[in-house]
Length: 379
Image (cartoon, rainbow, N blue to C red; front, side, top):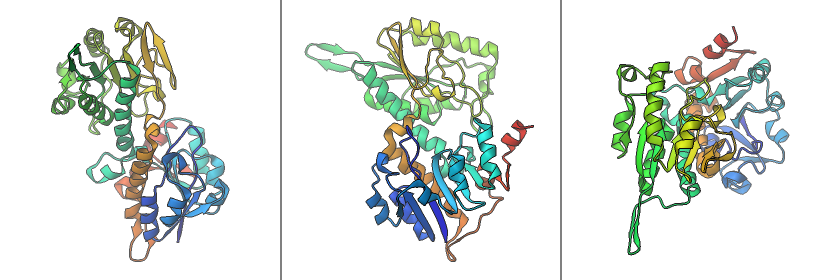
């Protein structure tokens, strides 16, 4: 019998790593799920709902963790939490592996097998396990909703007896999962939407959502995508040409959403102080890359600042502001990852350590860091 622990996340994290739906499914696999009392309240999952789904409610985190075989978490757990587990236990979370290496090494030293869900391979079979996509999708939606509220004017065009209300202009910078959802949401609200990205494959996606694509489409642009689907770092020359195009375009925008991130790197700088100063008073920038330094030069992570009448929001964990949905999707991602590890007839775990999803997300095992990107980083 595998015992799984789920504890309440530290503030300001609002999400939880299990849902009543996944508790029921994990119990069907033969697991005992122990959940700290109150862990799901910020996601509207009460103790009673978890209990009805088959969970055991623990009065404290220590009680939930004691001797458990596995810890499911949203953020990287503390070393004390990992030490409270059974020796060699599994830890599954968004580990933020490129930050705080000492903390990762400390977790590894306990002998725990830790898995970073953000390292999930971008393969068809793993789409249901992809936490970056599930959470970015919600962040892209919420960025537009927040921006629409902050800019203090109507989004769609309205024809009234008193005159016409013009549609607001929204510019989405970075067309990954978050960017695509931002485009779709802004279009649903009635905005005139444009978008930009250095990856040529995104041009057709932007057009399919009814938005206009804006980019310098030269030879470098045509080669600007990695095999994994991420944007490649661009040359200084290309960045200068793209910056000039963006500078001219951004002047007339009411809403700008920036989403550009490359894993393991600081966020690329897309919007300069000068660009902000060229924008209309009342315009809003929502910078989804704030946690990695921001795509806008004036972004302050976790704050809303105003410069020359332009408001710049640098939200941290925007998906967590829609915790009901974010927790439900994250919990499903984890269950989809775990389910193939179980023998459903014998109701025991039989992990295939050579499986692409297991190997791709495994950060530590047998007392040391084992993920290739972290091993290389440490040499």
